[in-house]
Length: 379
Ligand code: CAA
Image (cartoon, rainbow, N blue to C red; front, side, top):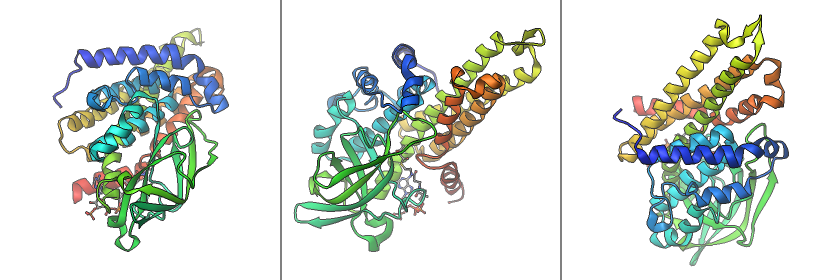
């Protein structure tokens, strides 16, 4: 891979790191404990350009590349993976989806507020019976003059409670299977659009995850993204990029585990020496660092390919598959290195494990990533 960070990437890394340490770090544990959404931090992330990093400047975004996005995502997620996923969904699923596939009117109407953090977006594909089997959409959208009428339920929607704008996939013609699904832009406040219960989660507890209900929600035809029937391709293509963001989130969590483990290994003494002098600990740290370096290169490779307009879906799946595994392994090892202290809340590594696990599940489980990779190889 032909790659080197430029001045802008390095500046973004510094800005994101400083913001994460100064603004997110002091309250991350408390927000995790209280399951509290980081509203003020998200507003500030919008001011810094982190909520619409790849959105063109003409639509109010930062006009940056995917490498910049991945770099900022890693730094934010290293400190607070909940803030990481809030940022990721808004950037790579909602903003990217609207800019790449929306009409000019939709871009003008929605992107400025989403990119600046004034409004927040969510992406509603999953349903009670359509998780990995995403094409099996039960939510329906029936054309009625200049509107569609939506009915159905969406599950596991990240940002679903705090969002203002939601991209919703719905079946416009169930007889056509995946070719009968369309994508729509819904706004909170549309009559019949309600938010269900907030899920109580293992990790990323300060991001909100809810179900969404649609009962005869009238959505103008002007809010359909692309042609009728293009919704599944839209969703899967958008998820290809989303997976790069989640790989970067996983990378951030893994890096946090490594840094915490190094610091603890220098501070904690056993057998009259810092535990970092023991090979049992050194080998864990060496493996962790090697795996993280490999995950970072895969993630950057996917980002570089996306920026060069090359095919990136398969490498994005590899990056997410590998980085999420490294995040979970690193968190387990970090807890082991910390011993009893790792199992309690004081040293944060137990939060890193809880946060890491979801990266193997959302935006396509690890099993789905393997399917995407294998199909790319075998046809
Ligand atoms: N880009 C564009 N189009 C694509 C595509 C892609 N990456 N992958 C598939 N397609 C097209 C196919 O070509 C096909 O169209 P044609 O029939 O015209 O060729 C159509 O989409 C349907 O694809 P498949 O026939 O391959 O569908 P499938 O049911 O066999 O399998 C799958 C597809 C890969 C398993 C897919 O369903 C999948 O990725 N599932 C996981 C869904 C997922 O990631 N969900 C995450 C929810 S969102 C989330 O988590 C966000 C959050 O809140 C954090």
